[in-house]
Image (tube, rainbow, N blue to C red; front, side, top):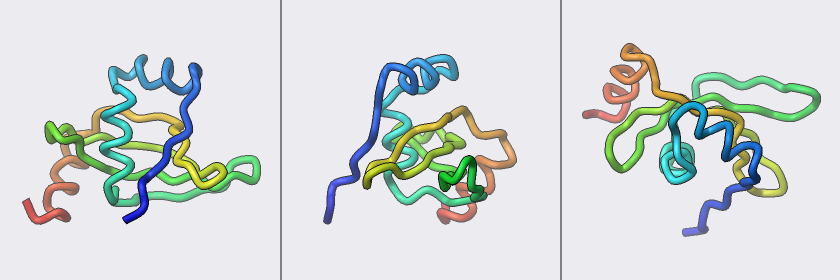
Length: 93
């Protein structure tokens, strides 16, 4: 199984911190088969929005793109309660 690679810099690390999401939490939620909810192209770049869970079962709504084979965080924050319920129903929990 191939390792999932991420693209981090000070800007997106700071942005995650403003939403009280750590780099590790984003990687857990986005890197382990998130449930994709939306897709759009912004300035020619494909972007996805999805729901994923951390190892501590925190459900996050994550937005990301793929750059040079790496997942690049755009934003992440706690999922709304209805989105978290949807996530766990889809995951069978």
